[in-house]
Image (cartoon, rainbow, N blue to C red; front, side, top):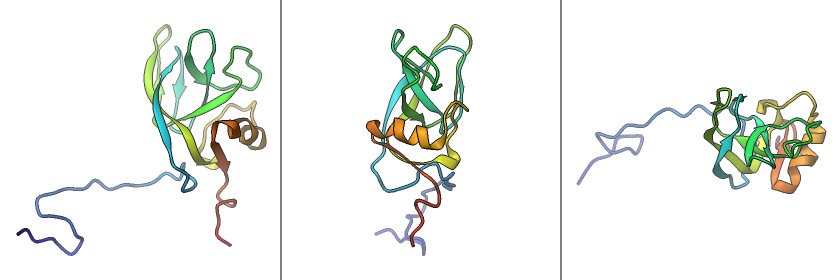
Length: 134
């Protein structure tokens, strides 16, 4: 029989330290999937992306776009950078609750308009204050 230490871990096992970045803002179940990122994109964790209808690729959502990407529909899990003429695959959140203070989005959006646009996709935008227990 193995002994555990005072932390409840078995000898010989290791655990990486997890340091949350506060992008996730609630207990809503997170749904993720790999998506194709369009060319010439520099997306950081928390970037709000939309689907370009003609190509089936995701790019940073811009409210004034007319290619389909003006409809924000996912939030990047990790940073992804693509070169000109090249695409890449990266993980994205398709459902969940997210802290607007840690999201990255184009200046054509406000938190209020982004909140309304993401709601039909079961992506809920919150602030640290809207999540506070009173």
